[in-house]
Length: 162
Image 1: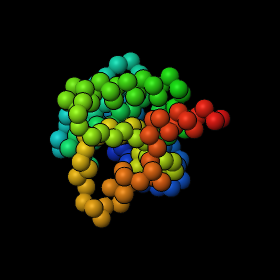
Image 2: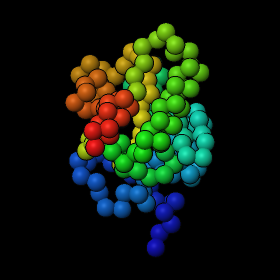
Image 3: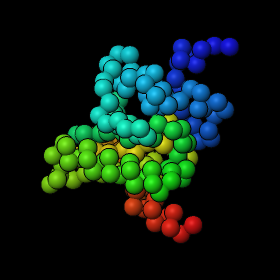
């Protein structure tokens, strides 16, 4: 059997979750320290880390500042988040934005709505605007349209209805 650490991590771009996703999850590997964010070509350090969460710069930033916040535990999407973990991730976003002087600057934070995840490990996008992706970019449409993303507050409202 191959060593999981030596296998190339997958970044998934599928509607349905592939088999064995957790064993190849790039965010699990970043969360437990096996892989540095940024990849081999431009590895970077974590922006934040505690016992449950890490944060790092998006490898292809779509805004002036674009950070991803992930739980170290593998959770496939935002519907799997506990209220406690959601609140903790939101507090980390507040701290990161404060550290980057975003008190008077437009910001955005959200999760991509399942099943449109690019990586099957929940991740919160935290941005200081403006969005820098081209106007025709599908990713930009996802970042700007509530049809494709859900904010932490909207997720809380959804969870309260359950």
